[in-house]
Image (cartoon, rainbow, N blue to C red; front, side, top):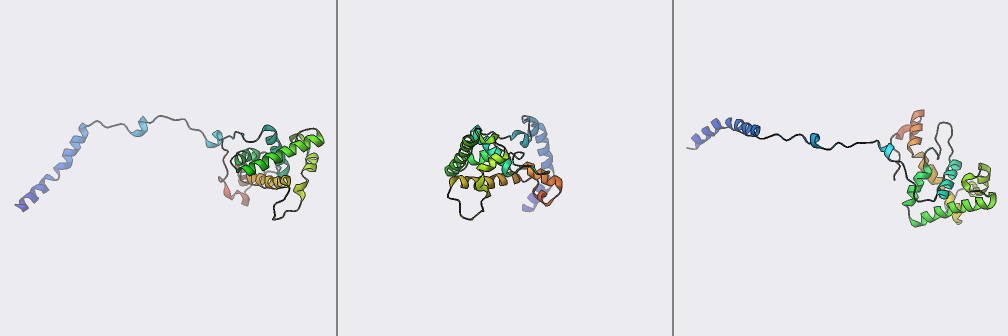
Length: 196
């Protein structure tokens, strides 16, 4: 009996897929998921990711932009801090930093504006380079491993490093470096994106 059952199952086996196909063809076929998904408009991330300044006040941000122009101006084909939007990036970065760092930046930028008004009767952003240079004397001091005791000197030291880092890691700097074909172009596509 067992052998007979085995032979019957061998004969019936080819008929099973035909029965299943007939059953599947009777059911309606749903449309593909892509056909029913809503169409969304897309944009390039670089087009939509323009920064919105929100941490620094307008006079502070203007002073930071001027400081960036002095510390890292554009040279030949290399963009400077202004072209790299370093001040806007630092507005975001410092806005997300610890309270101590935020206070250091705000008081440092306010001190620059106060001293500019006191000595030249105009805000720091409107000073020419020689006038601004008189206020930025601590930047010419020799660098040491120990942080400066004076808060303004400490601010200038940190802002100089931050402006340099933000500029050299920007899309504009990397794009210009790649265009020159130099060694600097090795990190093309590895840059910070502006954030809201």
